[in-house]
Length: 283
Image (cartoon, rainbow, N blue to C red):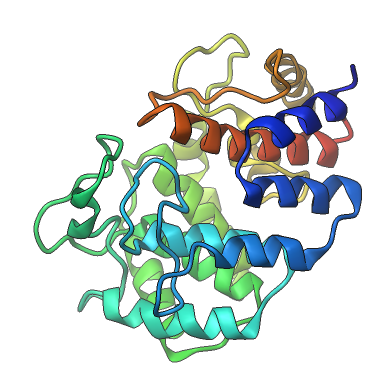
């Protein structure tokens, strides 16, 4: 059975409605409206996103990462002015005096969650997910006072960024790919290139929670694509293809909160794998 047909069976059987509609939208010409309606089911009463849109924490309270996940969907299907206005009304209420968003809020603790979704009281602003949220808003064509202040926060943090982690770098790359100051982007990318490579699993046999080149460069036009030789990327895409499971989905590489959250995240991972393979002409 072909890769796409196997994946289709997985989405029909096991994925969330949101990823099911996203698969239909990206690979079968499905309607944008169906994706948007599925996304809006994760809105709280104030119109911001919550209810475990990011599946590794099950709290009904909105978190910064939930807004990022929603913006990623909108970046795929196109902006919605009402949704963006609601998110932008909400972001300033979470923003610290430094101008950035915390990684996660204390309210995450009221429901099951992965161990990395913990925080101290009064959590500080962080590049992750501030940088990616800012980048996604630029990609969506947003102008807003909050965006200006948050952009300044990200640039300031980037000046001091040396020893980082993969998730912060992934967030930073989303920012760098969309922010208007292109000359400044090139300077920062040149400085961070070695750090990105240090956190890349360059060997195709890497096991466990690893970040292969396609994690940092999911598309040919990705900013980090230039850091990896073409032949290396091709080998990793071949390995990615072979990771498709018997049920048609791709696995996650970290411990899940529970069986339900594992299937939910497998839907996200499977969709990302298919989009990357298609973008590089492997699918």
